[in-house]
Length: 574
Ligand code: FES
Image (tube, rainbow, N blue to C red):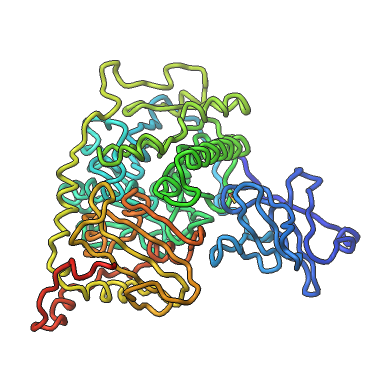
């Protein structure tokens, strides 16, 4: 049963307002026991939930802040300036949602749930973030990553999807793609779709960074961009609504699917789905759980980044993520909860170190925690091909017929991957003609468009073991004025050194891809001085590169015909 209503979050009478002190006030609501922060000054009041945008941590007073405007999150030390509602750590990053936002959009036009018959709504797990949901006569598919790697060659599927998964994708009535990361927007998978059914209806959210920004990669002709927070009616009983992520609204989304008044909430891998405002008591909720989906800290070296520090850090992070997810599920009280979207493995033999050390949460552990803290919520850890009959499960959560597991002899885990096919394709960029001319560096970074930032980056091309290649490029970029000095400048500056596998780096440059392939795909090794996360820099190269790839044809025409192709060894720094 879905039951929601608009509610007042925090009420303060005149006396309470008068008793607020100038600056930061921490308040607890009498009604629901939740915590809020109110900032008071001559201009009036600003208020927000005491809930960090990152993963919902609690803010406390920041004792380093002498102005009395900043609070600090107890989880990972993000800092929020409450007078501007802007985060100051990470710098140049996010705004906090303030109280007084409009009503939750799914409350518009609420529908009474109707009884579901056996077999009417069936949810089949494919692999990673890919679920097929059959609702009456229609079939919806989420995030089909069914073949090939993601993030260049860094991520591979853990699970062997059902043998007919590609057929099912190609005959689905609707496909939702949550965001542009390649474990959700999988070009090898979508290539099959575009070959077999180019007009398959695909739905994506209206993110400022379009999901299909690399249009040319596949010829799909029926991509529908839908606005956030508005019901999209598919037939008399079926509708869906796409919501944005609170931390990455420019690129990440999640979805509510509703059939005959029954809601399925899929928060995919949003860091903070819809800024933390989500429907309660949905019939089925699914979300990520695993962690480990970042280059940090496993690809970092130097300074404190030794193996024991990294192991301690990710253990702690995993635990926090597990508690956050369990807490979120408990507070939303879905009838059934299913962890998914975390089944990848760094399977390529050259990534053995990452595979061995980048330990992730187990879905079973999260479900065990939920079972302990919220025993009324039924949990489901599906194997590929497992089917949940929602009607049966809602009628009687203990009914074992509600879940059909794959046959005992079905292959659950992959034990081989087509490495060479995809790695060779990436490596084919190495011999591109553009890299015969050192000026590709200027051309590329001018195209990228990031500057006026006091950071110097050294980029080094390496082999698979991150050993510099003798005739590979090794150069500095000074992002202050976009120059390419032979040595580090004398002025004070932040410095980052990045060793990149040559095939992936050149493929990224050649095709104008985002640097996720390198960073999230574990294809580089990073050291930095000082040890600071440059949000602006990484955010630019991971989400803000131009939509059109660099015009290398123009570049090749521009490079003076008389210029001898430079040998790459001439680019080495001493
Ligand atoms: S910094 Fe607040 S939850 Fe991570």
